[in-house]
Image 1 (cartoon, rainbow, N blue to C red):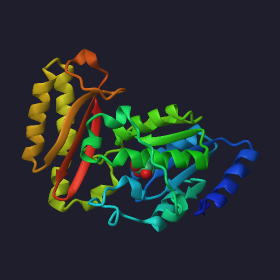
Image 2: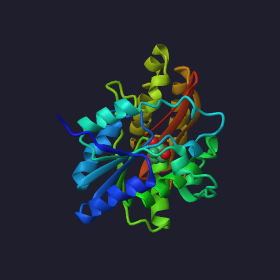
Image 3: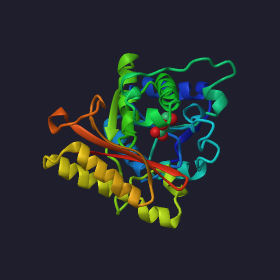
Image 4: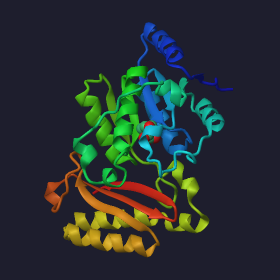
Length: 283
Ligand code: PAF
């Protein structure tokens, strides 16, 4: 039977484990998560195992990246099954702080990322989000001192923000983005997919299908603005309210209007019922 990973809940217990790893000369990979683990997270763990001696998975539903109107209270919390999945995946350590351990009484810092964090995508609809993400990920990097940290490409703007933050703060960590894991019908795996009703779930793959069609048309030289406008229409027909479907430079996230402004990444966010989904695709 696989060995259950050690689970630590306090910064001091985490430090003890990390010091032990370092004394043995081991390299460390970090997979930051908010739990409710799915195949996408487990793919990050597998990739982490290829890149370092030991894999630390953090599980922390970070309150500072949710607006008061968002789903912090109802976000799925499945610690027991998460630890079971991480046992099977052979992760080494689970860092699961309480909110008070992460943000003790009197905590008074919030990073204010710019650059890719102000691209007019997620930041336009969730203005609080990247400040919360950058702050908690910087804390995770300080606490775990990873050599490499792995993030899913599904949260593409987040990946760009975290990469920039690690560079700007001189964290000696390699930030790596790992390809999105999809359901058979193309829907990107997400902890929030559990919110979808049966009917909404049937509609949900339209996001991926539309991006695929748009990517092929853009690659074939069709005008980007027209392709995206038709794409948005297509998504709306599947009962989604579209926040954005945009073509951006994959590195800077600056808007692109012609193919040569690339490499191009398509990014989409749309809401069906009460559930907001995001996804992205390389052109
Ligand atoms: O992508 C997530 O699950 C979260 O935003 C992260 C990176 C763990 C920070 O809370």
